[in-house]
Every structure is written in structure tokens, then in C-alpha cells.
Image (tube, rainbow, N blue to C red):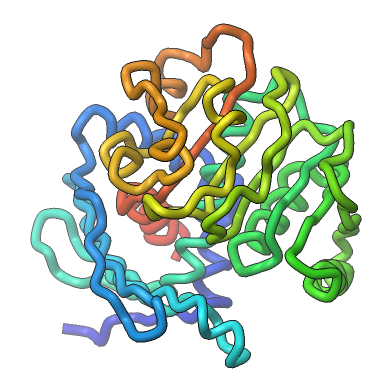
Length: 302
């Protein structure tokens, strides 16, 4: 048997174009809802310093994957990435390993692409302006996706500190992407807000607006909530994975949402994104199904 190819972060990113990923995720969302992708809710074990190691397997007839990642928020103070990990890609019929991708890159790019799928489904026309709340790895992946897919949109960033905002802006200036700091509340022209933090308390608490799509991607534990409860309750709620959201989406759990009224993004792909015309909130917590979709793209492109 030939040695298994291992792709580092740069090589993994080259295999995962945001536009191709978006289409693959639309298919995977339908497959997941229909039971053609098997992806149990992730399991985790604690690490020292409030870190966690997460296991996320998924399988379909054509492909099987296992992502193992660690998330350690305290690494920021050490000047280290907060996320490490790898995704092993296997043949869906034989289980034979085929190649290994960089876990944080897969996570970051598929999460950002899933948000962009939400924009396609729930926002009429091309957005004029985005606000990304957060300046960490996930926020950067979202800024990359916005820069590629919506280059004419204004991109605002809101960080925890002015220094973090400046570092974020400087990073993207090198890539030719202009980022504007958001001072205080979201600028009125912002029609898509993306919260990409692990905050335990809301970082977005503005009133729900029917002309503004809100997407929460950072919080993935019951005790964490990026979006204010009042905003959640006033919105039509969509999630990426219903079972996982009921266990992990603190934004929704703390707001006491009526789960009978919550829809999946897969149902929006299949049946259309019809709702009552009011504000929309898309909450994603992650699923091995989205990693599987990314691995399908990588397998096709390698």
C-alpha cells in the first residue's frame, strides 16, 4: 500500500475553493436530512485549561471521514493557534484510508462556506455590507469567503479590542481586502451579521430586522451564546444540524426556542427558504457531515 498523502494547511486550502464548497454543502445538507450521510453529534473530552478534544466521524456510500480536533482558547495568550487537528479520509466501501487533510483548515473553510450558503438562501440579492464579529481564525475564514464570493460588499469587523481589529485589518490589507472597523453598533447598511466568537455572553444584541440576516457560528456549547435572547426569539430560526443544535446551540437553548418551529438549512435547500417574511437567524454548531462534504471536494480536486 502506498503511503497516505498528508496535506498541510496551505495545500488543504488549495483543494477547498469556497464556491465549489458551497455547492457541495448544499448537496450534503439534503443528504444529511435524508439520512444518506451518517454523522452523529460530536463527542468531546476535556483538556487542561478549559480546552476540549472533539471527535467527529461521518460516512456515506462513497466516502467516510474522521475529524479529530482540539480547541484550546487559552492558547491565544501563548501566541499559539486555538485549534489543532486532522481529518482522515477513507473509502466509503472498504474503509481504507486515502489521505489526511489539515483539520482547522477544513473546519474553517467549510464553516465559512456554510454561512455563505445561508446568505444565498436567506438574503435576497447580493449583500451590500457584512459585519464579522470576532477576529480569530473563524472570523478570518469568513472574511476570506466574503472577499472571494462578494468582493463588492463592504466588510466591517468588530473585535474585542482595537488592537485585534487593527491586526485583522492589516492581515487582509496584504491580500487586497479592505476591512473597516465597526465602532459600537452595527452600521445601518449592514445586511448580514456573522458572529464568530466563543463568547459566553451575547456579542450581538440589536433588535431583529427583516432586512438583516444574522448568522451565529462561534458558540457550540449550551453555556455559550453570541446572540441576545430577544433577537433569537424575534427571528425565524434555521440550524445546520437539528440534533446537534438541540444539544449544543446555547444561543437557542438559553432563549427557549420552540423547536417545532426550527428548520434545517437542508430543508431550505430542498423546499425553499420560505418563511413568514420576518427576520432570519441561522445558527450553526458544526457537523461531521460538513467535513465529509469538504472531503468530497478535496478528493475531486487532488
